[in-house]
Length: 293
Image (cartoon, rainbow, N blue to C red):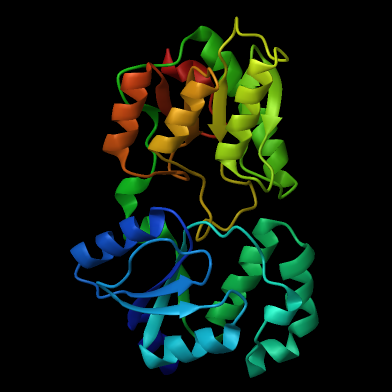
């Protein structure tokens, strides 16, 4: 009990994948008086961490991770950023604790959905009394709020597409596959898979160009947290690039789950959306989208 309490008060570590989220979390931590240590994942992390105490770590190297956490007296851990691939079994470097759980760990890492993988990793990280916390606990300003974000609001056709895409994203999440769906004219035209949101939107742009999707209706991208998801990792997120890609795909706007999705650099997102003539809005799961009207 004493060891656990001590670790909970210890230093904050940020396990960093690719993208801007780790940078926003690190900056928010510093602004709050923290001195975070960055554990950058090899071949994934793409930011410059030279201004922080940092270490480079191969994905799947649990023994190396444990040594880093001990070295810096880490009590709390945030997992942030994208990870494009999972470790091969040859890359897994276990600790004595993970050796006893090895068959289950390997099975989860190699063959389970993202949610199961993240829960397995969280369990391993917390097995020595440390605590995993969500990026939104360090940077709460990143959380989407309910209603329009920017100058535009969804119209009646958009609300219908939001409702349809919400149904699809919810079903997809229950299968532990992805978090996003695109509806055009009430028709689900794309579901997010392992390729990620930007690539899903690009598929829609390609289908438009090929004439397989009508240009008469615009459509909406919706991103929801998976119903069973541990909110301490992999919350749905959008950034300015999402808006730019949505514009290229001819979409009318983007809707994300309020309180359980992240908007990276809200000012840049609003500027991109207003320039592109798109709406961005936060939606509440289980509530009627008619509430926007």
